[in-house]
Amino acid sequence: MIARIDLRGSLSGDLRDVLPRAELDVEAALVQVRPLCDDVRHRGAAAVRELTERFDGVDLPTARVPADAIARALAELDPKVREALEESIRRVRIVHRDQRRTDVATGVVPGGTVTERWVPVRRVGLYAPGGLAVYPSSVVMNVVPAQVAGVASMAVASPPQKPDGLPHPAILAACALLGVDEVYAVGGAVAVAMFAYGTADCPPVDMVTGPGNIWVAAAKRLLKGRIGIDAEAGPTEIAVLADETADPVHVAADLISQAEHDTLAAAVLVTTSEELADAVERELPVQVAATKHGDRIAESLGGRQSGIVLVSSIDDGLRVVDAYAAEHLEIQTADAAAVAARVRNAGAIFVGPYSPVSLGDYMAGSNHVLPTGGCACHSSGLSVQTFLRGIHVVDYSRDALAGAAPLVTALSDAEDLPAHGAAVRARFDWETPTA
Image (cartoon, rainbow, N blue to C red; front, side, top):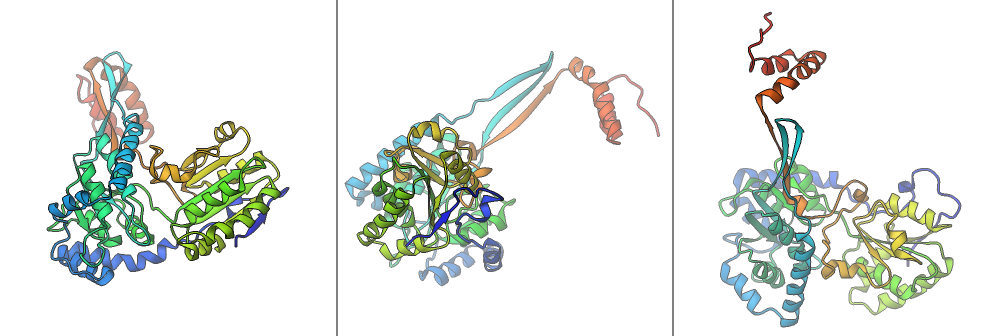
């Protein structure tokens, strides 16, 4: 059901070339996405309507969801689901409030200061997927940090569902709980283009965030620059670094939990224990047979993006997981906290047997919008910081500028940009050089 890679004694070369990884050809998807985005750019709401009918099979006179539909979704929400969403919102808000930045003024010289001022993005578009599964939890993970950052205007888009053409009721209910009343029944690349260019229904945004399929990733890549983006999210990933102390039932269950998302989802076990590897291999088919989405999970686990990797030591295991840079990384080893502290590359780290990735997906308080495809070696997950811009405010007095003037002139001359130095000297009673 799952491949095995034996790296014991052979950790050489670029490990990224031998580790399992989902293939996601965003460049190829761009060829198909570009004309869709161009159509939305030129024809606005009419293009959104026609493309939504083509891809989602519903004809919507307007993409915006009526306020009464949002209120009705909340009123009809299962009380247990409402309780869970409310608690998720509370926990995520607690964690993200501690991410808020404060302005810092630094005295550089007497009379000269630089202040870093943190300013929220003006307006954002937040995407909540709705394909093989629906993700009210992703609404929480996107909206809460934007609200904590102080974003004044935000809109949510999620694909319309048949037969009524509205986003899934759980998506709408989550929006209602968060106080978001601007919601659009638009999916995929069309939603990203609508946010980027604006239509008669939807004013343009400055940034688009949220997970999605390859078409969403391609649209983000195409429109980056016109809009800010959080990341080009690919299929979900879980890596588990484990030794002989790990419970194979737990490990198998956690691999399955992420394989459930998509046939391209990646599930990787890195272990020092051949006995654990054998036990997990035996356990996987037993648990998969008992799950609702067994066929999808089996395809994910059997794909080239999943596997069990054997290593000689925990040190080697750390080298492997750092090279892999997983979206989600579980540490199920002896002294798991100390091992976790040595990890450099991961979107989020889950420590010990009682911190499974599923907890982070919903209720840990952490954010589950995380870098995929190895991007965790250079990128972070969604946070309050995503929605803030640092602006340097420079405030120098006359005397402070006078003290810097000879230094500015020396550097501007060295770079053959004499007008830079002249711009400083023009403020004083100095002779300005003539040509």
